[in-house]
Length: 293
Image (tube, rainbow, N blue to C red; front, side, top):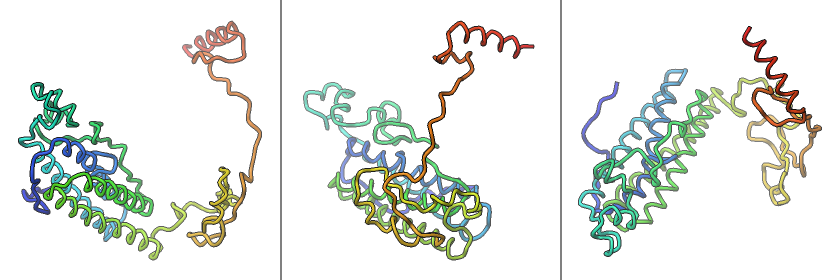
């Protein structure tokens, strides 16, 4: 069960209203790498965890913190919208609040739909999507995805930090940046610990038999570009991170196969094919009759 304590993790209040910046802040709330995503991602990973103990508890703990960050951003957005003048737009549009909001860069739905409140959307007003979530049940795959989510999120918060000179907003963002720093390190360390303990390892999933791979190409770097500098990287020669092989570099693919003939779909799908139309039509009629017997 969930309990809610009516207090925030960090105290911060904007210096002044700013409807334009409130819209920008929506990205790190409801965007692909926003706080809603990581809160739900860690939650579903915890609910899908198959083993008890520290990893499951880690997911629950950080997931709960991220729900608090959702609340912090939602309240900050509402504070930025409180008493925000539509005259932030050009003076010529001051007599038309909706036009003024559009010209000023405000999210009009902040006013029309949410009544000067936050919404579960990104900075363009696109609704938050559950498809943003990664929760595979494989902890090494998920922890690696979590580290990426924290990195992408921190990049966005850092950019937004430099889009405002509001001391109160920057104060909150500096706190979120610090927590992103911690969470990046936590997920990377947790992923490393999984490998050290042998709970999960590369290549993910570790339990799939390597003998069932086409092992000849498992560690080949196949260069499908005319840029030659990639051959200089450690991914083109030397031992592989999983410890099971050696990288090799190849200028192009090492396998090839002839193109199969064009497919011939059911004529009732009405795709254009080389057969005469009358043949397709007759075949479709016959198939219809046979399928309804």
